[in-house]
Amino acid sequence: MYLITLDGETDFDGWRAAARSLALHRVVPAEVNWSVKGHVNGHAPSGLFEPSVLPPFDMADSTFNVPANFISLARAAILNRDSERFALLYRLLWRLKTDHDLLATMTDSDVAAATAMANAVHRDIRRMREVVRFREIGRERKAHYAAWFVPEHHIVEFAAPFFARRYADMPWSILTPDVCAHWDGHAITFTPGISRTEMPTANRLEETWRHHFQPYRPTQAETPKETSGKHGRNLAEASILEPLLADAARWTGGTMRPRPETPMKRKTDLDTLREDAAHCRACPLWKDATQTVFGEGPANATIMLVGEQPGDKEDLAGKPFVGPAGLMLDRALEEAGVDRRKVYVTNAVKHFKFLVRGKIRLHQKPSTPEIRACRQWYERELAAIQPALVVALGATAAQSVFGKITPIGRTRGRLIDLSEGCKALVTVHPSYLLRLPDPESKELEYRRFVDDLKIAAGLQKNSARAA
Ligand code: URA
Image (cartoon, rainbow, N blue to C red):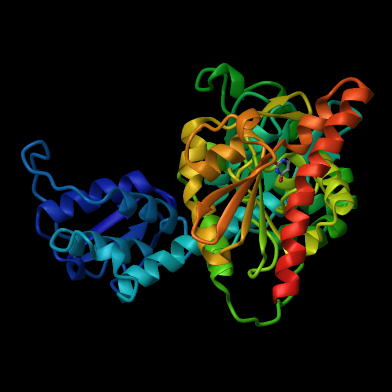
């Protein structure tokens, strides 16, 4: 029996190195017992048997390749709280040596189990991004922001960089029962988790706080400059705890309330697509965005409207065109006689791309590789809905709809054959109208926009009559 002890619950590199070595030594999965420092998983508690030691192996001489999607699956699944994950992933790795396409067999119980673990992790990360709400504490000195969160899986270390990018200019702490993450404006540090049972009284929490933070406060000698200083000092201050405690019930209530049960409903193709797209990692935009903003609207829509990408408001709401450009679009659709409730509205790129400037997230135009990476979702939405008309709002949408850079000037305002039974119409993006500086050209361009949408209105009416 081989006993592998990983450094921690999220020690992917340790798992990978051990799994690789075990596989190269042809150690069958049943012969391996995986544990994490401090406790043993699996069937044989440590001390009851003498673990075998792998002989040294010249890794350079012998190697094998696993598909890239196995690595991303394993990276996510390893964050799952299921204690069987290390063994399951090694079993998959072992089987991949002889069956390279194994991951495509979703009916395989190991593949299905690992995929379910990875999906649960992704859902938990999304939930964390959505529900973490910082509250200002310690205002009497320097402001610090804190949030309480209870993760279902070991996601805090993985998810923390997102919050560092998103809230780059405010020092924050995310407190969880597993591990606490802290950002001081320069670096992320981690300290042990805080148990809820440690929170009932101010004194006890204060004690816990001091206990947890002090041993981990690095010394000048061992700390990179940016992780010491104001962050450590602030956290050690008992004064910052008081408002935190006063607010604790509301705070935890806000983040720990069980999610309401959603009524059972039959899944449509679009539901499946939406779920798949929620885990999309085809380009790096997912890292900073709050969530994938998928299309919305009836699956039998005659018209599909394609925008560029979600903006700040859409990123937070998870719905397309709900911000200022959405208001402009709604107004123009109404004036043109298009019923938005009957339209499927989506974007060429489904994650918000932005630059942080102070407290503002500045919209950035998506690049061609990002548009290409996201095009699979547009194509799959198109195939699921089969609209009679696709309206491309602006150049990015047109690039996605036609699969190539398409100047708006030359194509605008006329119906173009896209495929059997489906036409395309190109017009401007509503945010172009919002940016126009003088009221006269704004009005003129708005009228042209409404005229373009009237073509869509005609089609919507005809198809309603035909139905
Ligand atoms: N702009 C877009 O292109 N899409 C949105 O969803 C919002 C703004």
